[in-house]
Length: 211
Picture 1: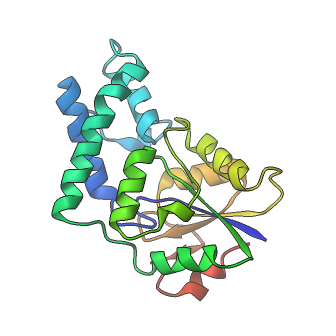
Picture 2: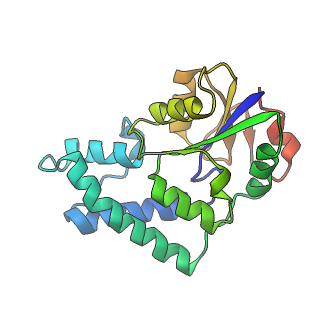
Picture 3: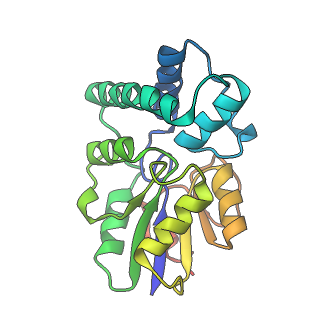
């Protein structure tokens, strides 16, 4: 058995750019402040983690729960409006790849995303994924990407005995997998890594990295 853990934005679906834009606009609309988007300087690049750092650096008068309750509904509206105009596109072959994993007795599957659960599900559904079959852990569950991944692992493998391979696309995925000792496969070309695929169009290319 192998546990395959999947990121969403930039990995399974082509949503990174519009997701970032919708988030920045939601913060500005609710606070009147332009959030600094140099994400590589944020200790936790998740929706909740970004708000924590935003409070520390730019908006100390907010409590995290208060700010999250303000920003999240606007962000959700922004996402819905965006995909009404242009539905979310899967990364080539991603739906077939996920279906293959779910239909096999060789793999356990989970999703660990830094986004909020509500928008994660909206985007995946728009791209045509069957979310009812997916275990999804998100920024709703913790602000730390590492903790989100640990929770996803525990959700499908209580004892943590099954080896994990994580498919991600960003620098923070590299860092989290390094801390956790998780086998990482990068999707796309945002960061360099010795295990990388451009997309999921060739299942064998992706599956050969699962260890």
